[in-house]
Image: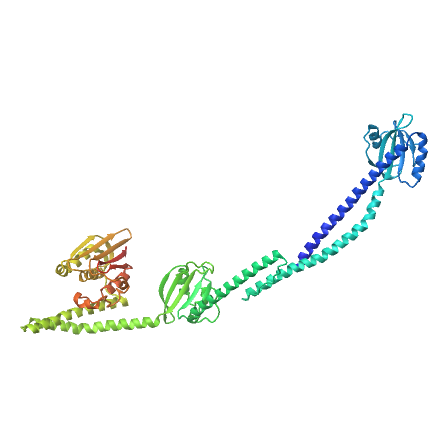
Amino acid sequence: MKKKMFLQIFLLTFVCALIMFAYGIIAVKTSSKAIITNRLVEETKLVGMLLNDADDFEKFSDYHSGGNAYRITVIDLQGKVLYESDMKSPMESHLNREEFQNAVKGTPRAVDRYSQTLGHEMTYYAIKTSLDDGSEVVLRLAVKSSEINDYIGMTIPAFIVVLCISLACSLFFANLISGQVTKKINDVSVSLQNLNKGNYKPIKTDSKDPEMYAVLNEINDLNAGTHKLIRKETEERNKLNTVLESVVQGIFAIDGNKKIILANKSVLNLFGCETDVSGKDMMFLIDDLPLCEFLSAHIGEDTVSEYPYKGRILSVVTKKAEGINGGGVCSIVIFTDITAEKEMARQKSDFFANASHELKTPVAVMQGLSELLMQKDLDEASKKQVHRIHTESIRLASLISDMLELSRLENGEKVETVTAEVDLKEIADEVINELSPKINEKNITATVSGKGVILGDSKKIFELVENLCGNAVNYNAENGKVDVEITESDETVTLKVSDTGIGIEKENIPRLCERFYRVDKSRSKKTGGTGLGLAIVKHICALYNATLSIDSDLGLGTTVTVVFNK
């Protein structure tokens, strides 16, 4: 850059010097021309004052031979040459000469013309004057125009010297200025290079140059602020990397072209990759083609799924990277090894099912024996205890039945089902009819409104409606209301069960579908039930891809909504 700036400054100065040189030559030539012309005019007028008669012509020879460079010519008004200082014999007529005609008209003017007689470029000036005898003649003086070149020749050496001095100064100052400017630019470059390496080195400034001083100070301030931001960004990135490297879940981020932008250590270990995968295709990390195809199909979407991988079960979560534009991140994928959790859940479910199955027979025996004892003629105290045994055995049998049903639903066991059109209103009416003893006991007003038909197993739909309506009756207040509302649209059928019962606190609603979860455990014996109703409802909803939602206010009642897709 220094060389380029030096050449630019030097060439600019050189061109300016040449222009000044040419202008000086033209100025000298113009000035010399004016001086010579003025002298010619003055000399012509002076000679004209000396010309009185023809005898004065001889005086002109003395005037010319006295070292004067002027050529003197006297011409009558008919153009005949009466006297010529440089010629001894008469010349041709000067009637058509420009300077002669100007003089006759009374408008004398200097005229430049090449003289064929003398073989030189001449400058002529002529005036009309009167002699003592009353006759008029034209007096003309001429001088060689080459005298102007003599003046120019005298000045050219001086101009050349000045031009050389100017060029030498130009070389010196061009080198000095370009060096100073490039030094400042190099200082800026060094500062930026240090900033790029994470270091901040301020540029030295000099207040003697206010403009450059202000610019360099601005650059220093900008570099200081940038360095601060870089350090902060580096610290934040290090924190993020520390967190990502510490989490058990495997995490990586990809762009819209399935190129990996970021991958933590856990995901590399999960797929047995030992090299850096940043900037590489997703398939370079994941050696399972179906999994790659699944992730490719869900780029930019929010999904949660499970995937078997080499004897393990992975939870695969894809998240759309909203609000992240600068890094080009499109999706974030999170892998969690849930093999142990799945095995534990399976063992728990197996124990749950086995225990339920094993308890079913002794409970049935207890129930049968208690029924036989109730037929005997016993005293009042014994009858009371036998009746209690019978009631608890029935409740235990119901619990075991629900446990087995829930176990089958959780394990996805195939049972005989009859898929057909199910009229929800008929199901709801049947459920309300079965619950009528409890409804009448608590003086509850129960209504069923609307209609809707879905495709499913009538037994499972009956179980779903029975559990919802049973809860609405069991947890309702005296003289309360239960409303079953069915609405149908082109795409969905909605079942809504509302009551005016005790209600549920908001923080307890997310856990209502857990097995055996009760908000108030002290009410379990009073209200009956097994604590598995909503868990069964949740699994039946999952079976039919239905949406389950619960809304409740403490002391005001609860509304459970199930939306079936047609």
